[in-house]
Structure formats: structure tokens, C-alpha cells
Length: 386
Image (cartoon, rainbow, N blue to C red; front, side, top):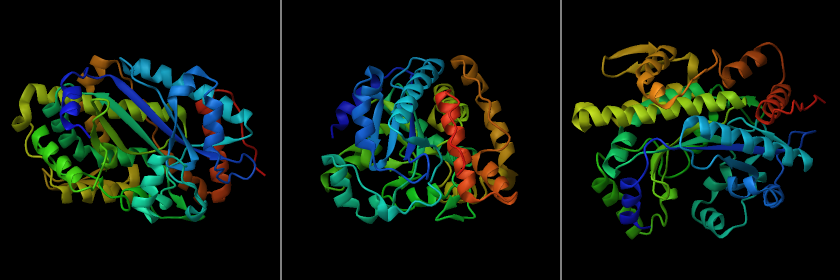
């Protein structure tokens, strides 16, 4: 990898451009079992000029990702994503398939997973073994352009402590192996606890320290490309963006965009604060162990739980942390025209309420898939209960 070229990309990057990436499970609409048919879906996408560049694979053959591409504003990114979603969902329905958008599949066996047959993913399968096989999870990623290599690293450093909140708000994977996991986002336990170079990175402070570390990994044969740094927030070498990758996939299309808006506002506000105060003026970043404590609270209790304000040494409601972040990001949201309408209860909370009301996990997932098909495609297509 060319770290000097990556630095140049950040130095010439355009502030606050946006790119969205949403991952979906490919399903049999009758049984809701995972269908390992990415190659078929991808081949069909090649006949649509919008989907040719925006549809992509992500390791497993039962997943398809849709990407907005680079947009100059959040509104443009949302519009691009809506159009690409609609085309993808119609194409998938024409193939006799359905798409699901939760962080995990509630009963699919990871041992049945098939890795996409490409040189890139075959190499990952060889390098990661069980870890690659285990990763049947789906998420939402947001890219934002940040000009300046040192500035991008500073933004990544400061976003670290917001990761638990973003995860809690997005929590949408309470079920696994036909059981209630007791967690709000079991996806995070699967992905961030098994993949190497994953979870919360340590602060680097500037590009030089970051490049020294990554260069060492490359020289020792640990990584061959920057995308093998699977941290929950990272500088993307190819795009000159800060990428946030912590969140579960969202069942409802507009909730996915609202969450993406929140992430975008957090990135932009952090960059604006850095411009005003500099790195030192923002104070000392939280320690890894402090962020990890709040990350566990997000995994276990989701948006309805509590977190620790380590600077004040007190426990606070997660909802109050969200309200504080919304107030903090108001300048960036006003500047970028981002409106955020998050629900009172997220996907995990709604799913567990349905379970408590007596619905089976299969029926809850069937309803979620129907909701995904309706809210992402706009076609009103439902998946009937058997």
C-alpha cells in the first residue's frame, strides 16, 4: 500500500462529501433461509448502469451491498441511495429473492456460509480461517470526506468515544441460533470480538504516527492493504474519507438514513471543533478501556441502557447522551442541512417487545423482512407469514 499516496488523497480531499454503504442478507422469501446467490444477483446488476458500480459483494455469498457513491451533500447521498435501493430491490424480487436488513440472521448456521470466490476473499478465507466463516453479519457504513491527513486522524481519534453511542442507537440484532441472545447487538460480539484489527483503535494523534504503525504491519506481512484494518472508525486510504463502521444494518430504510445523518453530523462537528480548538484544545481522548466499557454497555443494553461519563465520573442514561450529541452537532447539521428523525425505540427494542408479547422469533424476523422490503423499495411488497 502507498501511504504517501494515501496522505496526498487526504490533503486534497473535499470536506464533508458523503458516501453510504448498506448491507443486506439475500433470502428465500418463503422460508427466510439465507440464499448463497450473490453472484447471480451481481450478474443481473450488470445490466443496470446504476447498479453496475453501486452493487458489491462483502465476503459471504448470502450478502449484497449497495453504495451511494460520492455525493457533495448528505441530501444528495440520500437521494442517490434511495434510487439505487429501489432498483436493487426490484431486481432481487425479479430473481425470486428477498432482502433482509438486521445485524444478524436469527437462525442461519454460519457453518453453511460460502465465501465469495474471488482472489481477494479467497485470500481472506485462507488468512482468517474460522473468523471469515463465522462472519454472517450485516451493517451500515458511512464515509465522509475530511481534508488534511493530520486532521482526519484527529477526527478518528475523537470519534472513538462516540462509537458506543452510535452502536447503541443502531442496535438491531438481539437474536441468534433461534434464541434471544440477551444482547441488543450480538452482531458486534461476532464481528468486533473475532476479527483481528477490529473494534476501537488506539488514538494516533497525527498521520506520521498512524503511518508508522501501518507501515510496520505491511513490512511484517501482517496486512497487504489498508482495508484489512477493520476498526470501527478508520481513515480510508482510497477515498480520503473518515469511515464509521460500527452500526448494525437497519430494518427500516428511513431509520438507516437518519442514523447515517447522525454519523455524518458527528464527523463534521468533530472536524469543525478541531479547526476551532486544535488537537490540544479538545482535551485528552478517553482511554481504550473506558471506551470498551461503554461499548459493552451498548452491546448488552442498547439504546435503553446507561453509560459512564468518564470525565465527570457518573453514570448517565444513554438517551441523555444522544440528546447531548444532537445538541452538540447542531452547528454541523445546520451547515450541512442534515435532519435527524430517530425513533423512540430502535430495531432491537421493537424486536424484544414483540418477543415479550408472544411472537416467535421466526414471525418477528418475517415481519422485519416485510418491513425492509416495504421501506427500502417503496413497492409495498410484503413477505406473508407461512
